[in-house]
Length: 136
Length: 203
Image (cartoon, rainbow over all chains, first blue to last red; front, side, top):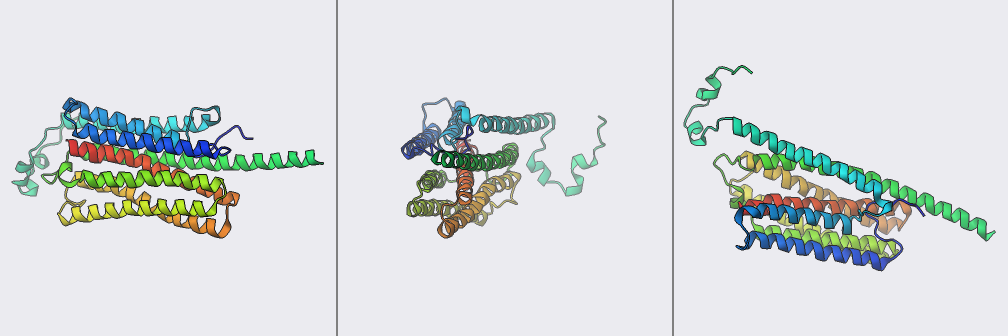
C-alpha cells in the first residue's frame, strides 16, 4: 500500500466510512449555510458584527468541504496535500488582504470628487486634468 | 509460486496507487492555482464593490432567495458527485451513471438560474458596463459560472467514457480529478455566496 493519499480519495477500502463522510459533510455544510442566512436576518446580533460572523461561517464551511468532500485531512498520508493547501491559503491571504489594504490606503489619501460635480462638467475641464502634476 | 504472484500483484497495486496519488496531487496543485486566480478576482470585487457610479448597489440587484436555491443545487450536486465516486470505487456502473446524471441536472439548474439572473440584470440596465461594481460582479460570478459550464461538459465526457471504456485505471483517475474539480467549485461558491450575496444584501 502507498503511504500517500490522493486528494479526493475517501476511505476506498470501506464504502460505509466513505458514505458516512459525504453524509456528515452534507449535513454540516447545510447547517452552516442555514446559519449564514439566519445571521443575516436575525436581530439578535450587533449589526457591525454580522460581517465577521458571515466570514467565520464561510471559512468553517470551506473547511467542512475540504475535509469531508475533498478528504484533505491531517492524517499522516496527507502531509503533502495539506502543505500545498497551506501555501495556497498564504498566497490567497496576501493577495486579498494586501489589495484591500493598499486600495483603502490610496482611497484614504486621495480626495474624493463628488460624482454630481464630475457629471456637471465637460470632460476636458476636469479639475485634475488641468492641475499641475504633483512632485513626489 | 503463489508467493511470487502475490509479490508481483502487490507491486502492481503499489504502482497503480502511486500513479493515482501523483495525478490527484497534480490536479490539487491546479485547483490551488485556480483558487489564487479567484482570490485576485475577489480582491478586485472587494475593492470595487462601492464604486457604483450612481448606479445600483449590491442590495438593489441581487435576490437572496435565488442565491439560496442556487446554493442548495450546488451543495446537493457536490454530495451526489461524492456518491458517484463511491459507486465507481465499488464498480457499480448503473449507480455511477445515475449519481453523475443527478449531479449534472443539479449543476444545469444552477447555471440556468444564474443565466436568468444575469439576463434580468442586463434587461434592467444593470449590465457589466454600468459601473465598476457591476463589472466586478459579472467578472466574479460569471467566472464561477464559466467553471460550472466547463465542469458540466467534463461531466458529460466522463459519463460517455465510463459507458464506453468501463472502470479502467485511467478513467478512474479522470473521475477523481473531475470530482475534485466539482467539489472545488462548491468551495468557491461558498465564498461567492458570502462575499457577494449575503454581505451585499446586508450592507
